Length: 164
Image 1: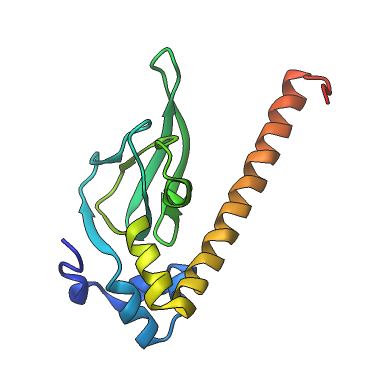
Image 2 (image 1 turned 30 degrees about the vertical axis):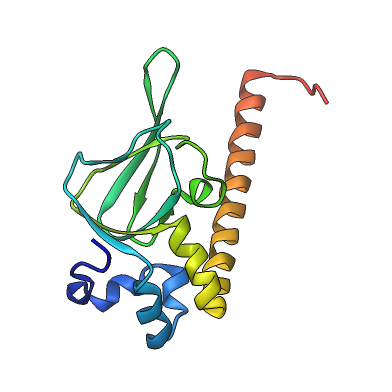
């Protein structure tokens, strides 16, 4: 399904994603040769927590929800993601099972970048790969900062004392 119907995707969709908005037309065309276009209807599961993972997704249009399940089977909503956001970055880099589930809330158009495609991009288009990896590092850094803030807030609310 590589590049299926990418020529029909509105150009402004690509501008919503910070990493793609920085690319010139030649770089964007090259990038699109490494990704797969995915259309998701509402309630379509993109991936399930615990499933093997080796790809990330960029949201061109629509909305998804990220949630996790407790060991008791209870679903816990983590966050919504809109056009311009990405998800699955940890699995792309570390090839680990998915740490959460993601499903479409609205009709959505996603781009999927696999680890194999990223490795091919690094070999064939190193300058392009550097831009994508720089964006990826920034995204992961922000997510880690957000998680740290949320944990600190949780610990403050629960009255957890310092154990370090």
